[in-house]
Length: 183
Image (tube, rainbow, N blue to C red):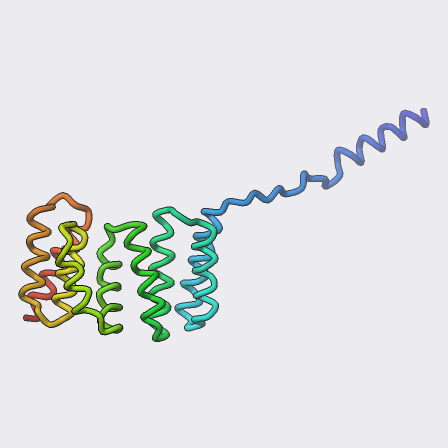
């Protein structure tokens, strides 16, 4: 009888105990990259630039060679522009465009960066040599940044007419309408 009571108490303790399986943490680099990007954006909003830069770098390293990397690099470039380092921002914006060339904001950021670096004229001559539709977008923006608004709008309008189904075309059309309102 004592054995039965002991066995019953042991089984009762086992079943009534608060035992749970331990939490098993799984590493998901993509999810962690988004987390670090969001933390970097929060730091940027709070004007803690060094911490924001570090968080964006962590996000880039956790998720290299993906489309999301373009967002992380653009955020890093914008942070560098805020603190007055357009030379470092240039590399970030160019990498963002290489990773995903269908976001018009990346083109605008790169054009502003070229303006800050005073290399608009050399970039215009460089982009004039290319036949790529994406380089024509950049060329039109550079003309507008250089003060040749009419020439830039014509080039951007030609891009919209030749590629009406491109994902970036509506953003270009909206930009053209904003620029022409100010003419």
